[in-house]
Length: 165
Image (tube, rainbow, N blue to C red):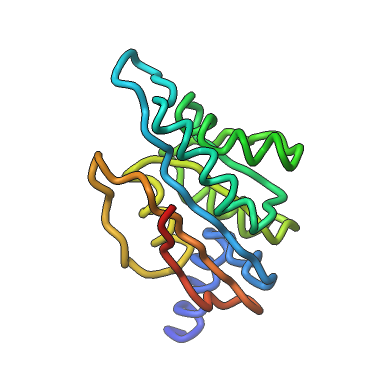
């Protein structure tokens, strides 16, 4: 009886995370927004941030994302806008407070290449959730140049790389 209950709970927790999408091969690219101006409640990108967004186009654009997600802030949307414009993809807004819902949506998506723009605390948390391990801590406020590339093959996380740009 305990074995059946354990299997049921395991199956329930896996389906709650949307792990069914893990049966596909995927490349999921996560990036923190680029540098922002220090003004207002919803600041845009600084000149350095705009330049970094162009670097991201070169560095992360090679993964050819079919879906792009961003929180509903100018700085996160503007960080991935050059890639979205080049690939003619609409940026989908997600709630950064519900990482499990975003992970489930990403994993259930038929698209195999996905880009996500987030924040110093949400990107590492999403990498941990998708990678199924607590490996990454929140970024410092001054850290902007990291890209997480999560490779899933035949339903298994094969590799998580952190690249600089």
